[in-house]
Length: 281
Length: 217
Image (cartoon, rainbow over the protein chains, first blue to last red):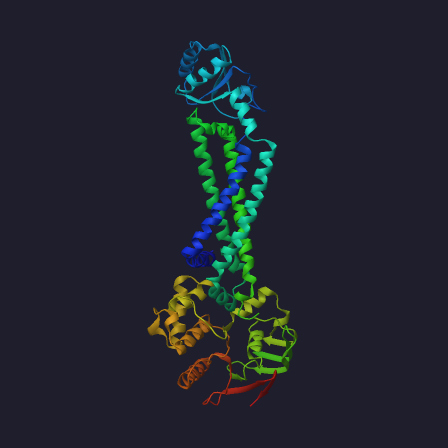
């Protein structure tokens, strides 16, 4: 490990501003690929469709913070029941409805569809409400991610990954040019490839890790934004309202980022076989 | 120490570089391999240093046939050979850092590497320039640094590829003296040159390599 960290430190020392900016471009491209991947799972999948209760027009599902006490829940229940737009209100535990989240929820039936919209506005201002699903949201979300859009996004994802690999090859070639004397010296000194290549692979993995961390930060920021602002348009990406899915996308995205970074590192390490890094070829 | 027999080597473009070379170098020898440019000196040194894979013939280094070595054992053997390649250029670091870089990349810890580097730089007379940028050294000091890099890990054999190219007569004489000093201190040295050195000790052997064939003076 002593050798690895020593060589890794020297490799980082060979990064000048020109190469550094290009390495950041690689991080940005990996991040873009991860964002596209995340959008498949966070945009256009609703909290209630498929594994939750069906929402009929004029009906609202109001999610409550799991931190509310039973007295506070009862107070909210009474407050909403007294609203003129409310026809009926029932309390359920989320688990009861087959939902992947903690806390309870109210299923509210409004007097009519028009009343449902104003009821949604009124309820969204109450403290302790973490989310609202309505028939309107479900409809708009399912439209926003049609099969065509998914196919286009898939194409963009493939192009982004290909661009990442092409840019990475160029950047690692530049980096290794500025590290060529060291590589030649290592070769003459009898340092095997198993020692020379891991720091290069590690640099690719580091790019992947930074992109993955960025993805996790952005996904969780959007998640908290969506939960804490019931009127935010970001709630159209209804996957962001599901903590389990946000966690899954973050972890799988991070894994993909690291693997992609590792592939880039391997691509870079393969360049050390070039004759320009040999004293005799 | 080195036993070469029936060694042949043909370049990628079909030119015969080495033709039935026989050579023996014993422990403690100082051998000057003399030949004109493109005579095959670098190829012979590259083969002996396990940097070029052999094609035909036998090369025994420290009793091991290098053609039959696995890549791992070839790397182990290479660590026992101090090699100064032709046109050596140091790293863009200080003199001391150049030597410690090699030692630390071979697995030595900082203190151990610094101790060995100081000893090697002392042997070649560069202790007064430890913190100088290697790129700013004079031509002879460049070669001294290259030799320090070659001997810092206490190799059994020293292979120097044309270290005198670009040096004036005075520097060449100084370098010859340094090689003889290192030889007296126990290093076995094989160095290639384009012309035989003017003054050599009785211990030194001069081997000529012309058109791929070896003959001893």
